[in-house]
Amino acid sequence: MIYGLDDVRQGFDVECDTVVVGSGAGGAVAALNLATAGQRVVVLEAGPRVRYEDMTRNAPLFLARHFWDGGLRLIGGTTQSPSLQARCLGGGTVVNSAIMLKLPRWVREEWQLETGIGLFTGPELEAAYERVFTRCKVSPTPMAVLGRRNLIVRDAIEGKLGIRGGPLPRAVQGCDGCSDCLTGCVGGHKQSVDRSYLPTAEQHGAEIYTCAEVDGVMTSGARAVGVTGHVIDPRGYRKLARFSVRAKTVILSAGTMHTPVILQRSGINPGGAVGATMFCHVGGGMVGIMEEVVDPWVGATQGWGAISKDIKGLKYEGLWASPSVLMVRWGDVGLPFIERLHEVKHATVVALVYRGKVRGTVKAKRNGMPSMRLWIDESNVSPIARGMKAAADALLQVGARYVHTGLPGVVDEMRSEKDTASLLSPRLKAKHLTMTLNHTFGSCRMTTDATGPVDPNGKVRGIEGLYVCDASVFPSPSAVNPQATIMALADITSRRLAELPLLD
Figure 1 (tube, rainbow, N blue to C red):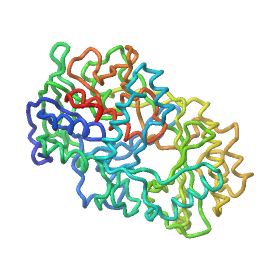
Figure 2 (spheres, one colour):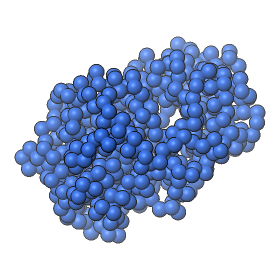
Figure 3 (cartoon, rainbow, N blue to C red):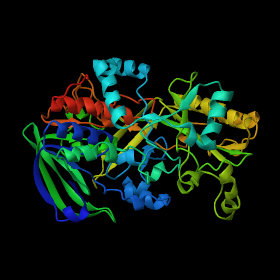
Figure 4 (cartoon, rainbow, N blue to C red):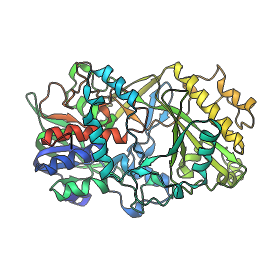
């Protein structure tokens, strides 16, 4: 049963075996496993269910309704960077590009060394990936829906830089290449968890409450006994009523930013480590204006990618999104912007994702929302700049009239290798990096010792019956898109709780 705003606007008070806070990648997996095991499961989602009629190309309106802070969330610190975090049933899986990549072997080994947890290099993680990939129908993006934009990125990165890549594996069945992943998938092709996991959990008896924002964990002594929160009207975010859910087990899957805030507001902070760490992938992007007409809105949003062989931890991707969102860093404003809009049909975008040296924090503000800070070490600038220069040169070699990055102090319209050399200027600093920090992790790290607030079983230290199943538990950045690893780790934690086998 899925309860909408009209069902919960007066508040509610229910009991269950397990309450799962958050319906995204981690929460949905946990809910299905525990419901399958016969437990009475309640899932709480702060946002509404996204209707098909809302999945239009009106991206600003969609972001305002279905993203935290109306799509204007910022992470401060070294620089002010936007972070798009979904607030809807299915969480980020509804609005991302559905890229599903396993954790690279070298990152698994590093995580094991960092934490002492053998799980990261063991067969259990691989088995969990396979279960997730099967249910989400993961397969490489078909060549037929790559579109010219992705093929140009392939020709540049693979053909000119010699970096072997390929169509990205995605949780999509029958993709029609509409490039509207940011606003959902009106055709129902994306296998987001509201389609692939939650309906089956519901069939097994799980109850799903939307518009229910959790603000605290209830405890009795050193045991979690449930959660409390407010019913929130998604139009205007007004608090309508209180609710409470009593449960024997509480699973927090509210994401890297909200899970630590819920714990902090509940007075749960083992070792002062909750929210004391946060990591993000850093990087940048560029627009290449090609001689040919590209029609970049045709083709899978992120259909082709490659991992650099020279710069460890750097990944290239072809990218597109609604022009109303993507093009805010391109061109000018007013009449000059309008006069150059015709160039958009010639655009190709390359995004760079880098696993760099960063440190961050998450703290609860007075209004209950998270305050995030990320400090980016200057050592990140050189590899990112070298990766951007290589990609810019490659775009020029495959026919770009010019390449634009939006970075201050860099040639605005790069038309030659002399222009792209400006990317290597020593005046370019971490504070100048222009990026969107959507991949966030590690605010409640999983470790064998007390340096992390979560133990190897996913349990919050010092509190019985309280677990975390989201990217908060990552020891450090994943180097690739995190959804598959979030789901795999949530699968392992929840299968242990449900006493289901870890190896098929």
